[in-house]
Amino acid sequence: MTELLTEAFKKAQNLPPHLQDELAEQLIEGIENELNWQQSLSHPQHSQLEELATKALNDSINGRTRQIGFDEL
Image 1: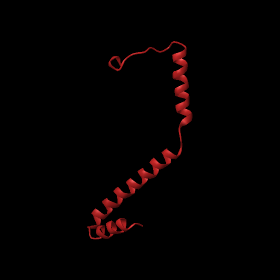
Image 2: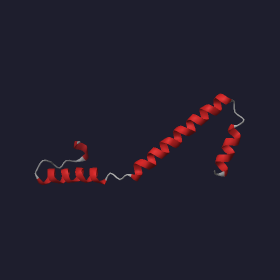
Image 3: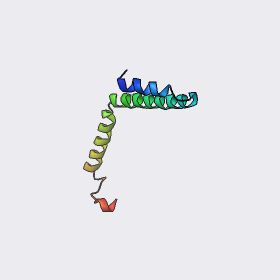
Image 4: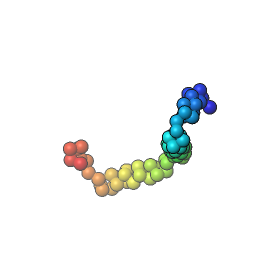
C-alpha cells in the first residue's frame, strides 16, 4: 500500500462510522470501475472495427456513399 493511501485510511479512521462506510462504498465503486476499464482496454476490438471499415470501404466502392461537407450533416 502506498504512503498516501495509508494516510487516507488513517484519516478515515477518525470519521464517524456512517461516513467511513460511505467512503468505503465510494472507494470500492471506484476500484471496480477502474478494474472494468482496464479489462475493457485489454481486450482489443480490432475485428469489430475492421468489419466496420471494410463495410464502409465496400459501400464507397459500390457507390452507396456520397461526399458531403460537415455543414451538410
